[in-house]
Amino acid sequence: MKFLAALLLVSTAISCRGQQQLVPLTATPNRPTVTNTAETTQFGVLELEFGTSAAARQQSLQGLLKFGLLRDLELDWAGNPWQHDAPLHYAGVSDDSTGFRWRFLHQAKRKPTLTVQYSIKLPTAGPVEGSGEVDHIVTLLGSKDLPARFHLDANLSYQWLGRPRGGFDHNWLPAFTLGYSLTDKWGVAMEFSGATRANAAAPAVMQNLWAVSYTVKPRLVLDCAVQFRVTGNVPQVVYLGGFTLSIADLYHHRR
Image (cartoon, rainbow, N blue to C red; front, side, top):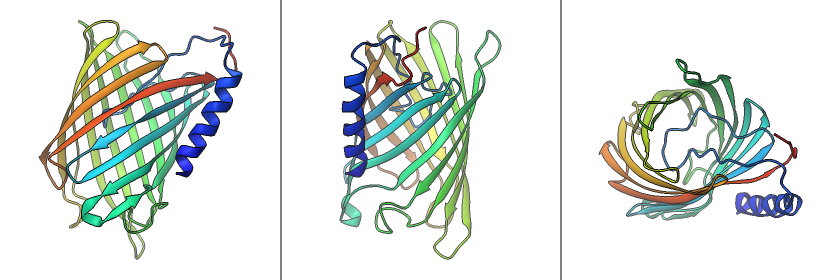
């Protein structure tokens, strides 16, 4: 609940300050896909992604708080303020993760946006729901607008998974999403994501996701999705829904 309380306090304080906004805020959603966009949150803007995930025996509330510290540098803090796992007889918080994202190449006619991201997972949930260990992940992200209103996001991550007796297991996490803008407000997307084998207890997995998004206004985007298991030890079907909201420009920039 610490994550949810922090979000509530920050959102309330910033909303009071941001009643006279000087900057047109535009949300930069990552959700509901596993694939993240290579674009970073607007300079000086605090942004919240929040939603639900529901499978037959696992449910959770998912939160991500982002801040555009610099024009090409974003700070992230992610965690589930509540999750339920029936097989483990567990209900509580998840592990938290924090990190940064640096965009080193901007999109042009023949170039994609390219970004590198680092995250560290902290064992805040304990050994029952989490691994009880610290994990590290480095990701290369690419995004490109394509002809005919299509858009492509692709990620390739390498993960170090902490072991109880020291050292790390390793695996790759590829993901890509192809999106299509039906109108200025409605969009659809299809995704494949997965992970290679990390150890005997964590075999390879692959999933397929289909999503719909609706832009209420530039600063607020709603989403829903259905994710299907292709292979591996993951839920057969997962339903997702949530939103991305640009809360306020902390720097009060004029553009």
